Structure formats: structure tokens, C-alpha cells
Image 1: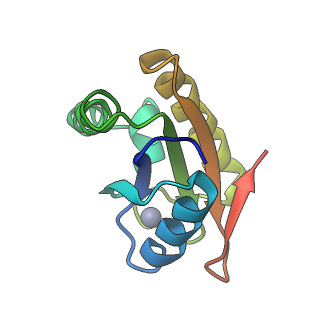
Image 2: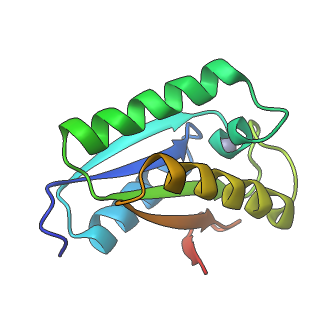
Length: 127
Ligand SMILES: [Zn+2]
């Protein structure tokens, strides 16, 4: 238990992963409320091919969750068969680590965790 009421997910919008990710994060964080920022393939927004408006929207959403809701943990999600962030697992995890570096830079005092949703729609922590 973190003591915080809210935790934060930067999620893909893909309908197949919403419930698995939200229930994993609720359990892992111990927080009853999960702020779910769901966009198409969000890890890609942090790369050179990403669209700047999407990155701005991500930063805005994360700031509201951290600064207004007091979240002290952010989960970054990538998944199998992502339409918004095509590429295999290795490629997507590289993008996810770039995203992690930027999010840590924005929020140095917040815990950042990476998640991969596999081809069976099960959530795996990325170490
Ligand atoms: Zn996706």
C-alpha cells in the first residue's frame, strides 16, 4: 500500500487491454482509483516519429493525476498487436524505456513502472 488514493496509467486505448491493465494496477499499487490516460500507442509519442500534440496531451494528463490527485506512481503500458505502436515486443520496449526516461524527468519524485500485455492479454511487469 502506497498511502495514495490515486495511481496513474499511461495506457493504450485498445479495448482488449483495459480491464487486465486496470485490475493489475489496482492490485499492484493498492490504490482504489486508477487515472487511466488511454491513447493510441502512447509509447510512440515519445519517439522521433511521435506527434508533439500527443506528447503535450500526455504531459497534461499525467500532471493532473500527479499534481492534483496526488498520485505517486505512474505505469507505462505497451502491448502485443498494438495498432498505434506497431512493431515487435523488443522494439516497443525500447520505446517504452524512452518514455520512462521522459516521464522520470517530468516527475522525479514519482515511481515509474513498465508493463507489457502479452498475446494472451496477461499483464507482465517489465524489469
Ligand atoms: Zn495499442
